[in-house]
Image: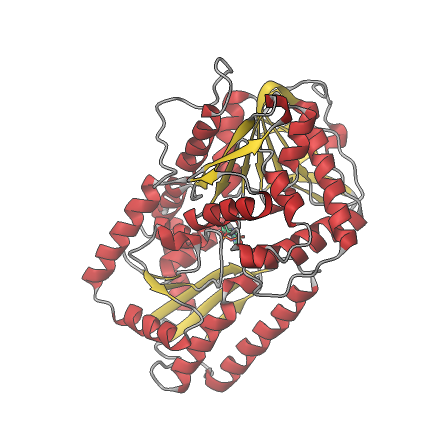
Length: 499
Ligand code: GDG
């Protein structure tokens, strides 16, 4: 945690960096309390993956600090040089809540909710992307590497290449890339693809996402896209072309970090205590999601509600704990979703709970990571029923936490994680009867089968952790660099992106 940057002496504002990460949000949040501001470190998967690289290579991180209408000087935090990008309240509304979360998010998640197309939102998206690109151009060293993250910044690669053709540029898309039949709705479909093609390497979660992108390139521009290689005409190459690679690099978690927490005696005690507080039911089922319409929270509640209605389960034997962390609360669709979910919880609890036993324990809060791990350890069945999800880190966190090799993961085939976690019980969350059967199968699964499945899942997650993800991405990116440019990653680290 840092004191207000106002007090930090800016000694390095003209310094430039060999490695620059650009993401919508910085790895810290600006929090203002009682007239005093401070920076709070917000450790997520991406931060854990990228911080060691930052320390080793002298990196800078460019992003919005999470508060509108404020300007902050760059400052140092946990070995990285942080460069806050200022956004006005109107820009937050149009670029972030509007175009990113009201247009791109639903479109890229297969129009589960209808995307809104507003020209003012698009114009602000272009302006804000330009600001991020200009910041990156200002802090990247000659022939440096810039890694741009996610759908909020898809125009940055081409804008940056225009400003700084000497740079090596990577982009990673954390959410799905939809099939062309859906993508083609976007009035600015050419501009976005052109923006992404400014990168040397474009990473996706699933092979299918990379394939959808390559097809969009062929349909919109007619460029040759064979396998993972796309040839993009380049004026600078004197009528020749540049090569852009588009392939999948499934993101992961700090698996070891979760294991360490899961071995902690305090957290293990807490897991036992949670079960007791829930009334020691035979079966604890758990869902942990941002409160988002892509996560299929309503679908799993419907399935559970029907099992109670049919008497296949009772509240004495099973409880569903649903952590729904608050998310994008100013966006209309999210307000409506919250109402809908809370109505469902109220109905199911009203119909089936008893004085001593609740059907659904619904928690609309964020919890510290320790508590999450205790919940994972307390849960016999983990429900990940996303209707569409780039990866779904929660599925991997559950698996990494189960050092006891117990617990059953029910996983939607529409989550990217399903490509890797094949020993889970895979479900189609739209098929409510199938989901109900999977829940009953999970509950009845013999201990031996649970252990066999969990061991296989754990092997995958522990071997393919987030460190491996970032290393393999940067390794492939490095191969696109001109010979002789300084290296960011050790050459012997494994590249498993094509698995
Ligand atoms: C996007 C893509 C892709 C949630 N509530 C709490 C909490 N969390 C943590 C989870 C997990 C993370 O937030 C959520 O990650 P997911 O992958 O599940 O989903 P998105 O937020 O939609 O993430 C997704 C991801 O980017 C990475 O590329 O996998 O597909 O949509 O780490 O544990 N953490 C704590 N308290 C909470 O209440 N501490």
